[in-house]
Image (cartoon, rainbow, N blue to C red; front, side, top):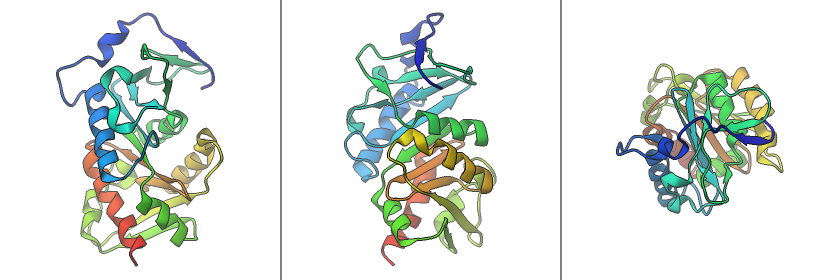
Length: 225
């Protein structure tokens, strides 16, 4: 996806207006505020996207995570057409979509995920500094039961080993796309990808808040070894 264009065939603002608290346009601001208060993101860092049917809802770039509102949300079609980035809806404010957008598509295309979350959790960053190899592994922890194979499949058991690939960071977020996709293909059961000195991307089927709360404590345990 390169340059962008707006599809004028839809009632754009209607896409982000709903009384349903679980509608993506309402859920994204709630989750972003939660991530901020948990310390997983600071300032405008990190990002989240939710896929619902043939639409993808994406948080904006450059807005404090605890201050994002439904009217700030971008909406893109899924699957996405080849070529220029097409938007079904853009905010009226002069905002840009999350810099994580190309990486979110890895989760949708390679995992058929319902959501992809990117945080700058200090625990995740410390894990990548303490773990020098290409994977982080941990077993015999109760919270493993809240993690699913590939983020969307069968739940792991207490006796299973959680394996999370670690890829190297790049100066520009979008340049992580290929190495992230390669790691996802090499480790098809991985529920997320750690980025060294940066954070974590987690692909999720349902319940994004719950599942990420199951992944983050493992990083926390590692950092306190």
